[in-house]
Image (cartoon, rainbow over all chains, first blue to last red):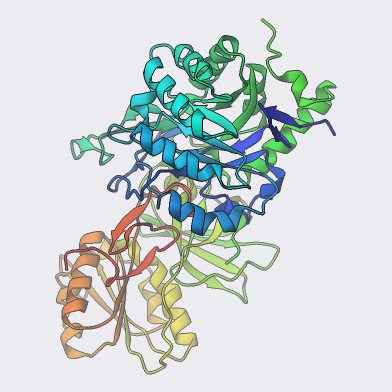
Length: 303
Length: 258
């Protein structure tokens, strides 16, 4: 049994496997399939200051080895989260991390401040990269200046671990990552979904109500892996890798590329028990290769 | 209800007309309790174009024979792969999912079960459960032509069956909402599943007739457990997940223009 412990700044994880926001609900939806306490962390659904209805149906289109979504941050707002959801998840031993989204800096700040007060939430993932909201987070995430502004503002009110989730829909993701780092982020996670589109040729209309949506799934993995590798070289803070991770081998590839932890997203829909299997698979790999700790393979890519 | 991920064994794959198959599934262990209107999510293997599981409603579950029946319409690569499965093959399912139909508390209720196309699937199990409770279900099944009618003999074992076809080849000609049984007989509960235009027409009829009505929706799903928020339906309480809060809804809750 290898030592699977890793860390994101001061946040200690039992192992590198977390769940990606928006694919795992509040964790409890998957409790019949996975022992949540065996995971390094659960990143819960994107939370905004106010209630959001999200986009109209249809919000999803399947694509070869992937899918597009246009959910649009449907959630009941941070107050509902604190009052109704938090009590049901606070006693899990895993790291419960809240994904914080918004469309204005003041909203991000107010939401982060509210969550800062919750004892059992040791970190937030600041979503500056959602492609599905008008003037949404992505506006901040596509320029270094925008990213720096929102991260600095949140940093002032949030004193626990601050992870910033980056958009891949940019010319140079390392530039945004460095801006987040300079503005006080403890970590960056990447990639959020890639902007895509699907058309129903028979009806000559878009499949998604929003026309475009965010692409995820195994098809995006090579792009995500490349970006994680680039960002890991560009910043000093730990990187959390995600994008198309479906099994332990995928997860190990991200660790080798420089990620200190990983998130599993769309694969939860294919196999609701996959996260537990990835934890076991990483351990098997470490034993098989004679590594005592998962830290030994982080960034261990040989070129 | 606890949910399971199970490998089930195919007992038999039966062609039902040209467009459907019936998968008869079993397992060594006793299958968990399942209710009418609930569904399973089927993992599709060896098909690169199909990544997501396919939601399929429970056609029947027989506790004594430990058999689960899935009526599958062949619409794409995933369902066509399911049709190639043979006796002894394995199929990976997540089950049971969703809420299911509300079973009546009053034994004197007169339920009418209206199905169209492959939407008849969940109504067989619902009819069986009602019959077990001492309630006789009446079925009204609609299709375009005689070729899309499915499992009529199975429905006839459970209760009286009325049929409409749009070409008039079997039963009365027209749509389900035009069948004469709706005016001849009094019903006190309607359950329906089928194409959306049909369900909307049924809901409209039921509302006008002041009969409580439940519809089973088929919105496109990803996770099946209420996590991804892809399959939402607009209701009077806002967008809700069909996979978790449904697939069965009272028409009173929906925002349909009826």
